[in-house]
Every structure is written in structure tokens, then in C-alpha cells.
Amino acid sequence: MPPRQYPSRRSSAQSARYAKRRRNRLAKVDNDLTDEQWHALMEAWGGCAYCQGQGAALQRDCVMPVSRGGRYTLGNVVPACASCNASKHNTEVTGWLRRKKLDERAFLERHALILRELGAHQD
Image 1: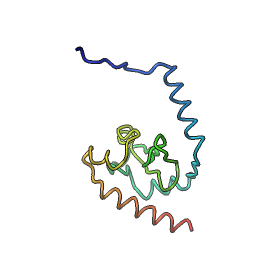
Image 2: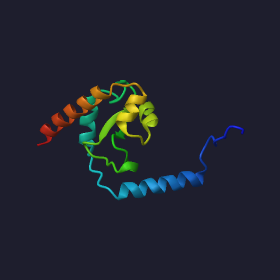
Image 3: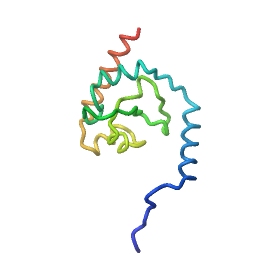
Image 4: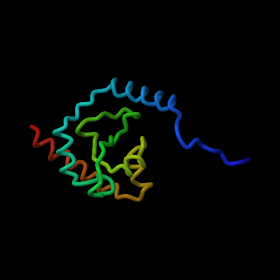
């Protein structure tokens, strides 16, 4: 059997359907991460939350993906470089960290510490 060939690009109709599904998912949940909270998260992490890379543009990545019920909230968003964000896609974070051979324990401990610190500053 010949290997399956995948299209190199999505058609515009596929992209539009995906964008519409994503918009609908986001509209159904509370997304209350403010710009101030996002900047505080970026400063606290000091780079990519996963690979600790610095200098790259950071993107908002949901620890629990939106497609799995996550929301854009202070407790669920971390800064991620484009490479880590694209690689993680919508997988569960601890399994993804293990597969990438990144330090899962260090991430979880630091995530908890940063959330505790940021929660204390906002009260």
C-alpha cells in the first residue's frame, strides 16, 4: 500500500470552517485574562514557560487547551514561544512535556509559584 499523502496546505474553505469552530468555542467560555495580567505573566516567566527560551516573541498558550475546555484566564495561560506553542497544539501539557523530554516537575512547580505570587499581588 502506498504511503498516504497529506495536503501541504488547507483550502480556504477548511480554514474558514476551523476559524468558525474556534470562534464559537471561545464565545461559549469566559476569557477574562487582562492585558495587565498577560504582561505580569510574561515578566514573571521571563521567556517561554516550556523551554525557557528568551528573546523570541511570546504567544499566549493555554495549559488546558480551549478545545478541551480550557479558557484564557490567569490560571490557565502561560507565555510560549511559537515553536513550543505549535508543537503542543491541543495536547495535555504534562504528556507533551514528557514526550519533548522537558522538565515536567520544574514547569509545574514554577507555574504554581508564579500563580501564587501573581494572585497575592492582585488582592
